[in-house]
Amino acid sequence: MTDDALKDEGAPSVCNPIDPLQLPSPLHRIHHPLLTAHGVTLWCKRDDLIHPSLSGNKWRKLKYHLQQARAQGKTHILSFGGAYSNHIHALAAAGCRLGLRTTGIIRGEAASVSNATLSAARGWGMDLVFVDRQNYRRRQDPAWLAQFEDADTLIVPEGGSSPLALPGVAELVDELPFSPDLWVLPCASGGTLAGLIAGKRERERILAIAVIKGGTQLRDEVCRLHPGAATTEGWRIALDHHDGGYARFSPALWQWVQAFCAETGLPLEPIYSGKAMWGLFRELEAGHIPRGSEVVFLHTGGLQGLAGLREQGRL
Ligand SMILES: *Cc1c(COP(=O)(O)O)cnc(C)c1O
Image (cartoon, rainbow, N blue to C red; front, side, top):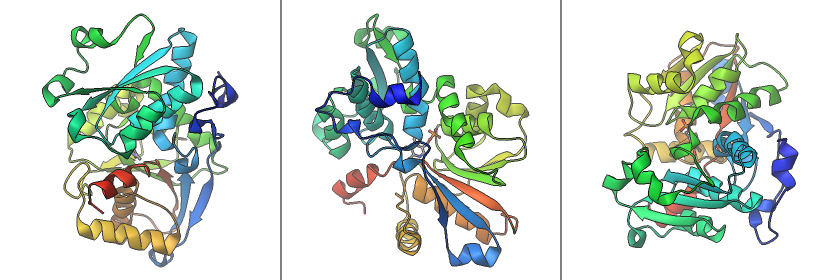
């Protein structure tokens, strides 16, 4: 299936997700005094601009899952996420666009989680099933999953991170008109990093900023998703910029992100893209980015999450 097929087929006219996909995603130069001081050139690969509701790495990771659903004649996609999940949001939009039924298994009680992310997903026709934490833990147990699926169902893992996520991410490398010295991106489940490792040219290096508290299991997970990563040189996960752990952030981080957005015009949120940019600038200040480097920061999207953070009074 080509990008065009995903662009145009079966999009019901009632869906807002029929907006065209902006591919290749734009590449924008970022100017900042600290970059100048360190002699580093920074570009941002704007995957957040691929589509207003199907943005970023979640689109990249879903692409070949959607293709597989088509190829296997599956008409229903089932996946999992938290109440503010970018993945659930993107999957619902994609299902609406392609005329596929979608189900989101959501961690939490229905009453306690009504928010902008879930309203949008519901509006695009996704069935939401709320499960408590204990049941949510069984999301990889086929016996438990059987109650939600039938012969027409394709199950996509949480966050869309499976080996099938890799080619969709890997192909973004070829959208660049040059070969950067360094890629920088946020890393949570490791699926996007695994795809970028699979796609990068040999000379290119990758700095992944862990946005969760993690240790060696993050690296292990990347190697599980992409066994070739174990023998690929030039990538590293920085583990000390998590700022408290997944979806946590300090007032200082959020202030830094807002100042950065004002200075550069680049929109960021504090959980993934903002935290990763903050991590990159901490690495820069620590002298870990060689002078003269051409760096490409992968903007993985996720800006829809800002509405949820505002609703919760966290911004
Ligand atoms: C899910 C997500 C990530 C993390 O990607 P992984 O493949 O899970 O490492 C990064 N940025 C945004 C905006 C996301 O939604």
